[in-house]
Length: 182
Image (tube, rainbow, N blue to C red; front, side, top):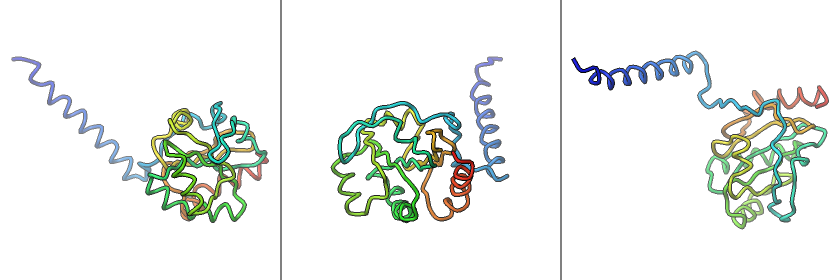
């Protein structure tokens, strides 16, 4: 009998097994949105980026502020970014420092968007080609990173920052970095 006839069945069974394992992980509390980052515990990648408003060159030194900050990757074409924007404004008013990375976007649209919706960012970096986002391992917008005062990444969130995510996930990490003096 021809063994090549069993190849499609074998591939099908392997796929079923992989899907079954993933479903069991999700059912037991695994978060399918959780994306591990190879950069946890490492500094923000070295890159020279231009500011959205001033076209000035900035290096990764902007992430070394002596206190924890949020790095938020966003874009005007991203509906989830629009949804999270109001909450980011609220965090900025509470004194949370946020640096924005405008990801694969039209700069003129981004400037207008921030003028119309208020600007929660201490600084906005242009990433028109997505090179910084690629170095960060970004899958899409929005994604937010918690960075300590020395520029080291401690957490990555794929998805929007909202009140529940802030209080349950991000704030405890942020506060711990403050307490540790990082």
